[in-house]
Length: 260
Image (cartoon, rainbow, N blue to C red; front, side, top):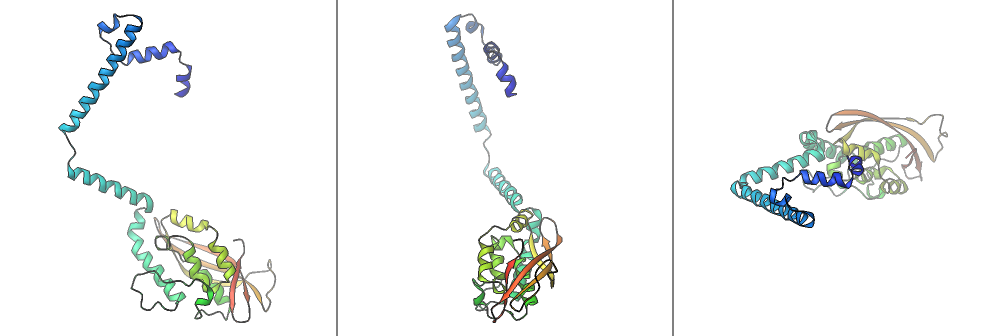
């Protein structure tokens, strides 16, 4: 369309503008500048008459307060559905309660017994804040870290750092800072699907021959988790993380996730 307009000549544009108005004979009988001025005056009067007619029609049939309220409610509903989707509305409360229960049972941070029911569990900012975490066995540490890190509830968490805080008791401070300081594409995909993720099963195996052998101070473990997602659609996916764990003599912690 833009190309056709560029190819039109000035005479064609004048003919196009002239065809939009049916000028009266007293205007068309004039010549030169008088006719152009008469046409401009006629178009101005036409626009004024059209605006007056529209105003009269609006006053004749004003919108009622009930109709206005219905329009506002419809717009709000469209906005909610566009952001979260119909599946999120149906499964939001059930999925949120499941994630909160899983995180509370696994992390068990101190000082949360008196918190009101239904509130998000308080997560420790550093590994030292949760001495109850079992750090004696590297396999258990790897499993608990992955379980908490992949348990996510975007409507409650707001961003991926909430999952990092939940997994922090089983990780080194360096890994916690690294994960919290970078975006997580998996969290973004979960948000786009309106999903809430919980981990149903976790298995831990040696990382394999591609990585160095275990030492008294450093081991590698392949952790496979089955993640169940409730969102626009319900589905399950399997995620495997190659983890590196270290110990300082007081307990094991995940120090690195290979490929992240």
